Image 1 (cartoon, helix red, strand yellow):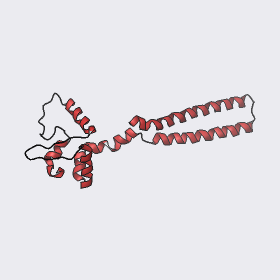
Image 2 (image 1 turned 60 degrees about the horizontal axis):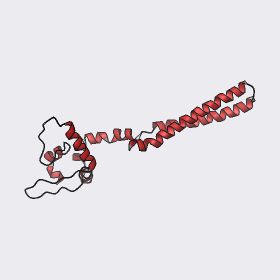
Image 3 (image 1 turned 180 degrees about the vertical axis):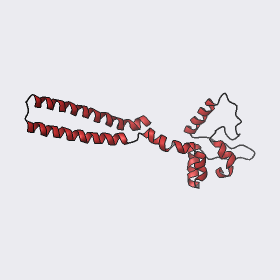
Length: 165
């Protein structure tokens, strides 16, 4: 997904570099023609100035595009730190934000039946993370909650069970 979103930016960089190479070749031909005296000084200056202005324009576009962050870098810089501290972020958030966070984790509302555990189903991305974390901790025995085996959920369940009800 990140590669698809970044494809246009990378294509633009490649295209601009190609244009720079083409202009460099034109500059070399222009210099050769001037040295071989096939063009006059005034013609040489006009064409050189035109090529130099195009090179400057392309270099500024290239600099601007290269300074744009790729979607993956933007995601890593802005979203991953929040995910690392999701519990703190959740605890400091207002009700609407807490609801949005839980909506990203849970695919349905939590229902509590008498004398039964809560039925919880997670969204596909969270399910993948849970299964991945189970695979990483396969050899280790850890006591998990009856509610879920999700390591992200445990602090919410034990610390602030009243918040999620």
